[in-house]
Image (cartoon, rainbow, N blue to C red; front, side, top):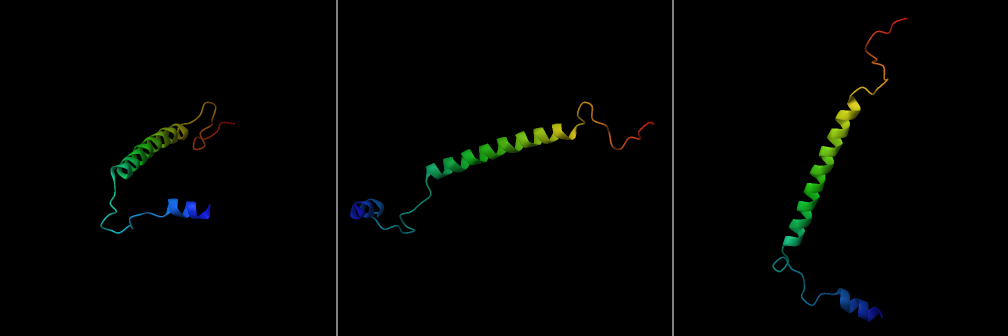
Length: 67
């Protein structure tokens, strides 16, 4: 069993800088990550703007209070 796993894991062609190149799959993954990051940043900014607005019933701390 150990020999079978070892045979499956080892590559027939040794990996060298000449035969290892970035591929289109890696570029696609990076592109998807960039799109996901842009969507998350836009969503965060939208919610941050909403959270900065005063909520209903919330008192403004800078305004003087009447007694």
